[in-house]
Amino acid sequence: MAEALPAADGTDGGGELAGLVACPTCDVLHRLSEVPPGATARCRRCGTVLLAPRDSALTRIVMLAGTALVLMVAAVFFPFLELQVAGLSRRSSLFDAVMAFSSGLMLPLSFAVAALIILLPLFRFAALIYALGPMAIGWRPAPRAETAFRLAELTKPWAMAEIFIVGVAVALVKVAGLAKVTLGPAFWALVALVIVTVLKDNFMCRLSVWKTLEERRAT
Amino acid sequence: MSAVGMENAGRTQGYLTAHRAGLIGCSSCGRVQRPGPARCVRCGGPLAGRDPGSLQRVWAWLLAGMVVYIPANVYPMLLTSTLGRTTENTIVGGVIELFDHGSWGVALIVFVASVVIPIGKFIAIAYLALSVRSAVVIRGHGRQRLYEVVEFIGRWSMIDVFVVAILAALVQLQFVATINPGIAAVSFALSVAFTMLSAQSFDPKSIWDAYEADDT
Ligand SMILES: [Zn+2]
Ligand SMILES: [Zn+2]
Image (tube, rainbow over all chains, first blue to last red; front, top):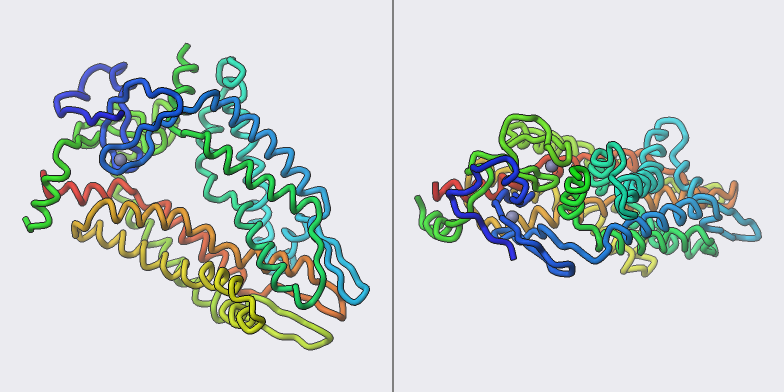
């Protein structure tokens, strides 16, 4: 699918350069012919996926991001876990877990945890909807859509909802001997959110999105 | 040129990089453009050609991550009080306790996330940075894979910090049982963040530059 470029090329006019792709990982130049939906073009040298367009990917990404946004709101407001021991019970929300470090020196850690499991995921979903939503319904991209999408990509490693879920599982095992723990609706909302996020990332081909953004912006 | 170099020369021939063509390829969107502007015409990301400061940032963040990893292991991660008795648990102490309770699977998860991954990551990043600097040409594909694994798996070390947060939020039953976070939670979280920044500062293109250096 992807052809490495003969050495003589690559020095012609500015419009010509738009047809080339430099592998983001190893910098090898490729001239990509139209990649049909469902197919995957990989870098010839390092194997990084260059283009993997999927049918109506934009619409699906925006819808999944919308779903994830709603699920996150539910996860924050519903009860998360309930602990019962010797007649006492304690209900805690996601927000309580975030504020666990709010005493004294550890306050910054509380903010960091809030950012990693609630704020950054929320920001990413909103940025994706803002950047891709108008294009999904056939409009021109919104102003500064490029910045929104770039920030969403940049913050991707720092959105850690799925790691938090595994943390919950480990915590449950740790208190199992001490008390009885019931999972609240917020826990299941967060699990659903993780699944939706994985599905969304599956449809997302970074380079195709950038190409589409540039093309739609030009027309 | 060594025998390895000759072998590599044969393998890399025919691959023209944007850099060699006198152009710049954007690392975030793949757009090819003429050198000059500081930002990519397509995505607005910074365009740095080959960034000479990249390795220095890798080492700086890596060292910071290693330094704060020490207190993370020395000081307690969890302070548990049950019926007036307080016990302190370090990272490794928590793993041993889980193991004693017979929860081997979970003990293994915590051990891998809090000990094996961080230390493995220190070694892997140092190895990648060293192999670029000394231009020791080891197979590019192997190092590329190593870099991908480091980037993918590093964030998972954060598990233990989340476990502490959940336990501390949940177990607050005055006299019967309370769990409070220890100072190690902060230094461990910092260590994970610093090593993530270190891995992100590493420019994967430099892996392939060293690979290529032999056949030019
Ligand atoms: Zn490549
Ligand atoms: Zn770009």
